[in-house]
Image (cartoon, rainbow, N blue to C red; front, top):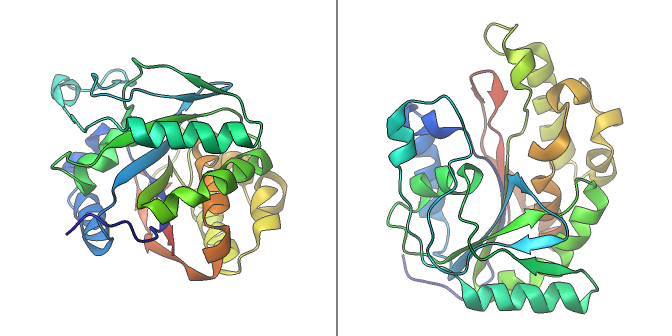
Length: 259
């Protein structure tokens, strides 16, 4: 693949946990997805695992990863992903957001967390594409869509905008369920139909308009990155498609592409 400056799609992906690398199916699905995409000039990641206000820009040079998980076997803490920093992208993000009155801060020693690097290891294992991670400054869906709209011009500069979450996410409820729980399957089906119908109003009010919304997302940080993606993809919603679906340990791994 050659690096492109053509308009890039916008993605929302379910990022999994560190053991994703050992799954017999999912890594190959992520690898096949990236192989179908134009190779981006840079990647802008918004992960469920970094909430910081005002909106923060992470490291713009290669720094250690953030192993923001506990109780896993030691080898998961030995994973490395030394992607180049993206200082030019960071400057463009600052300009776009500040022009719109959105305050921005820099946290230059903040590395990629597992919501960013776990899928990137599978999608771009050469770690050759510059990556910038930004924080979720709020969990308000409409505000996140507005941020996505402001970032949308980056797509025309060859930047792949990725919202990284999990289509359903309730670890506490999973402890009491075997297989795929009903609330996860019901929410996944509803979300798939809402995306296919481009029913943004329903998605924005998913806690009330979806079946089992509060069970699927008792705290909404893993669905929140979808709204950054939807904002960035607003002109391409009719080109949306689910690239990955199914379930992993009972959670919906639905991942979508626009454009």
